[in-house]
Image (cartoon, rainbow, N blue to C red; front, top):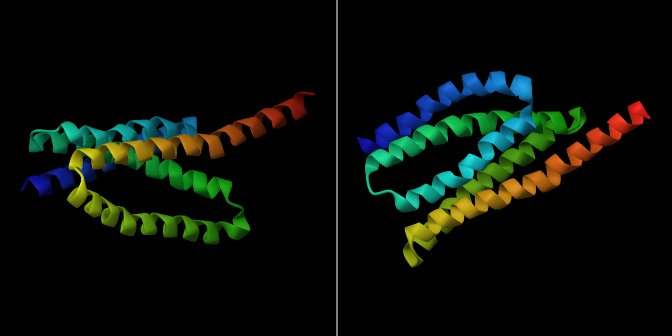
Length: 158
């Protein structure tokens, strides 16, 4: 029953997140939304290391479902914005391949670690991996896009 409640909480929160984040992304942009939702998502798995009651998982899943709704919305929108129209289908297919490969290997690695170390370490490693992912995103996407925008602005004004 608790597993069903926790899963339903995530889906319910995602519905609300889609409505709110869709409007916010229209005003603030996909990169802003990715940063605002991505960094709190980093913390979610780490919190599992401290849970002592199943109700805490429901609360985590409420926040997670809500935040992932915004993150996934912004992520897909940014993917469409950054890919050339002629290569868009290929880029989306490559992205989805990466998602599915991680969905296959993540649980395998997690299961191995669960058998050989501790769940606490898995939760901390998951949070650290997400943090590294967000920092790499900033380095490879946000900084170059901001530099390009500054260069365009300087070319227009000068």
